[in-house]
Length: 284
Image 1 (cartoon, rainbow, N blue to C red):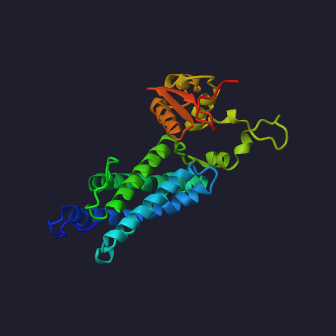
Image 2: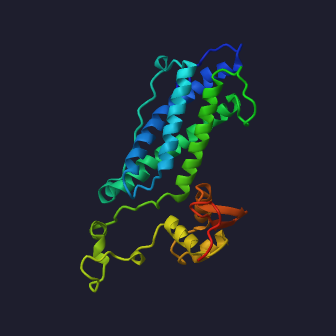
Image 3: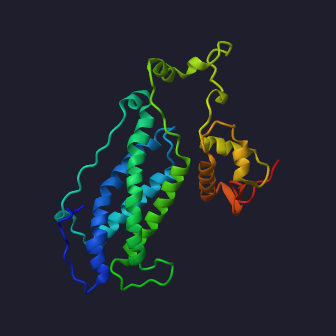
């Protein structure tokens, strides 16, 4: 961002172009480094089976990055004449990094970046909605400068905003670092909790540790033979296992509906959708 004392002078003969140059340009300039770094870390996390990311989120980040770059090229935005954006910095808890490096990367680096990015793209969406040539799906106004690129940027950022909300709704719970040497040993050797009577090489059953809330919601949904509500899902969760789960359950169900896994029958009522037809799956 430009220093607070710096001002940009522009002509108001073409207000739409002036707003792009004087307001949208600095916003895009400040957002691109965050978007690029978030995109690179998302690609790393997606390679890990337990990274907690979906390909759709990475696709949304890539599409948004391309759309911002395409607008910058079309607008001839003079980025080289603007002061460089200061380098991004982050911090990671040493205890968590040594006990669960993947969780440290996700919750200490990626998620703060994603939160910062979400705030930036929502500011850009406000401007691109006004400057887009088809903000409401109507006829294109070819007189607007860079209308096609602005519209593409608006659509891409709307899509990314949805993907960020989906990730937030179903993100893995925050991991806690070990509090002492004994806890560190237990983290390093999770199979030590298997009872001595278990056969050699046996994998501990899921009941030894509570599933994430997202997994619990998915298991509950799969158990319903017909339409159900969020209250039904809450009733199916193990009592006392999750703290204040109502909002998280609602967010998880909304994300599943947006992804096509559930059908929203009415407000607060859902049904499982068939993977092939999108129809309500019949109980066997």
